Amino acid sequence: MPKFCRHGGVIEKCPICRATIQIPSASPAPRTPRAKPGAARPRSATAKSAAARGGVRVRREARATDDGYRCILVPGLRAEVEARSLAAEVAFAAGRLGLLAADPPGLYGEAASEPDPEEATWLVFLIAHLSPLEAGDPFAGIRAARTSWSSGEPPLLDGVELGPRTTVDPTRSTRTVDAYRRWAQTAGSQQAAFTGDAGWTPERRFERVYERLSLPGFGRRGRFDLLATLGHLGLYPLRAPGLLLAENDATGVAAKRVFAIGDRMTLERRASALAGAAGVAAEALDLGLSNWAAGTRITLGVPAETTDPDAEAGMLAALEL
Image 1 (cartoon, rainbow, N blue to C red):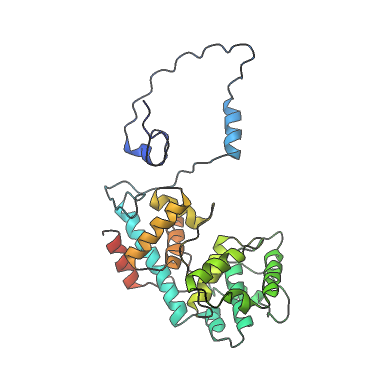
Image 2 (cartoon, rainbow, N blue to C red):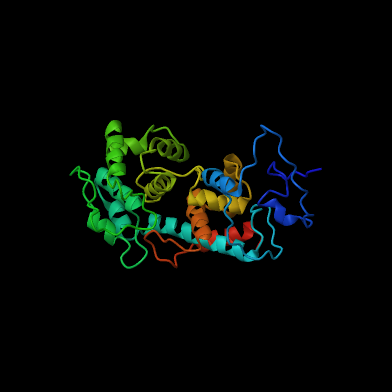
């Protein structure tokens, strides 16, 4: 009689739950009976491999050795070192948000102090779209490519180095920028587009503008970064209501590992529960999860040693460490 796991599948086949059971050694396979005339032939290994390439793929992530660590808020973590690493990355991301609000560095500071809201918003869009670098001056590439909103010109990308979270398509480098300008012009201005209804809460505004920003080449990562940065720089009242997860996004993949489930609504609930218990913003959990899964800290234009001690303490307490 097959046993089913909490994910709705046979426990022996679940990539998460099968590690918790002992699977007996398989007995010799019975001899395959001769197929009846007209019956469908079984697919070969080559055919199965080809089908797998076009269907569901299960990727095995490098994991720390199970040391018995368990926490109901992060059911996918099985090692204390993983939990402490997650706390550190969320603390860095929270510290970055605090720095944007209090003392934004580089081009972030220029955007925050720019008196023209159209030019300020355009600069933040360029930062999110091109992405700060991780070596040397993080804003060097953006400065080299930067154009003004009033000029109507796209950024000058020839020979410009782009950052690790760029959303620029190298084969169609102006596609997203052109779509963004049309989107803003339809609303009347960038300011009008990002403000929306004056009666919206910051969370409602974030969610609605996020939905409307679905532009060619501008996926979840770019949209979420842009809105989070605009909000924490104080240019617009924007706060993320959750992670707003999407398929094949780095944060979404990391969330599946941490929360041990693939259902989007459940992931959102579990992420909100963790953020609430730790007292951190969803925006911090977004970058924190992504950096944790990558094993490399992407700093997005702030010092790598940036941290928020209160956020780290909150995460450690929530993770029962």
